[in-house]
Image (cartoon, rainbow, N blue to C red; front, top):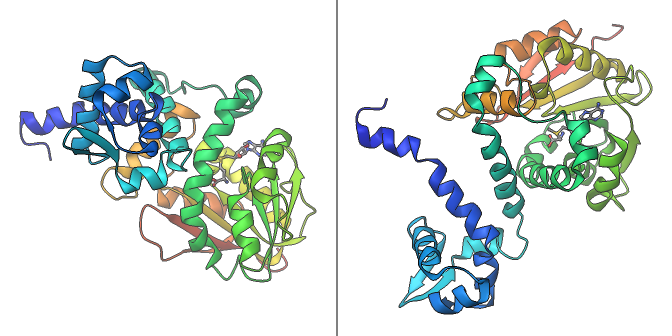
Length: 327
Ligand SMILES: C[S@@+](CC[C@H](N)C(=O)[O-])C[C@H]1O[C@@H](n2cnc3c(N)ncnc32)[C@H](O)[C@@H]1O
């Protein structure tokens, strides 16, 4: 509950720390400090930056806990060194959020019209492949954290044949293969070329190019696999499109096989996470973060039964459902 002006001001200036972190990356501060601690003057010269503005940026980064200032010499914290600087994995997450923050400036318009700001994904892949690839790089980083949870599900590993539908760079496919399953990564042809960087050479992963909204059973033969993983796809879709995708996923599984949905429910926590993620989808794709009840309804409408929620902490929302035997 917001109780006073200071708390409100904290909320409405939330864009500032985000911009400071993005500037730390984009101006090259984090990378430069990997060469060792540096003074303001030395950094301003090497980065060709305005000394006064750079000083304000460095001091903000110190107060945000991302740099240290020891007697006028700045250095990266160990987190920044390990996860951001020098091409660290969180750099792609920072770039993704910077891209979206520009789109969020149009939020009022999105709320009025119900239309997203960004182009459809297939257009983004062809018109701006660099940014599209960078977006998938960020999802790869985030999926590396979730993958171990999915690999724990007996419906997905070990010794299962699993379709990773719209699997992006194939992070989950790689993790399921490492857990002893065979994964078939299905995605658009251009995306699969990029995925070779992640899954190329992993014996348990094969790739299959397909448009999963065209193919009747998400790119593989009907009743050919033990399970289909539908990860972070439903939130890009309207409920009727989601049901259709789930129906195609069900058709791919053997009778008694499973469809596993990994998503973020719009009514999940912690805090405002679910509703904010819902808005993100409306700004970005025109989809929505469906509520837990709506996700369950969509799964059942697709002809799947026995929907169970895996016991993982929020915001992870993982639902496991079965293709009826003889169904
Ligand atoms: C939000 S990403 C999710 C990636 C991954 N499943 C994850 O959980 O991180 C959506 C993925 O679906 C793929 N995709 C979108 N439309 C598709 C289509 N019509 N056919 C196949 N894949 C598609 C995109 O290329 C992208 O890799």
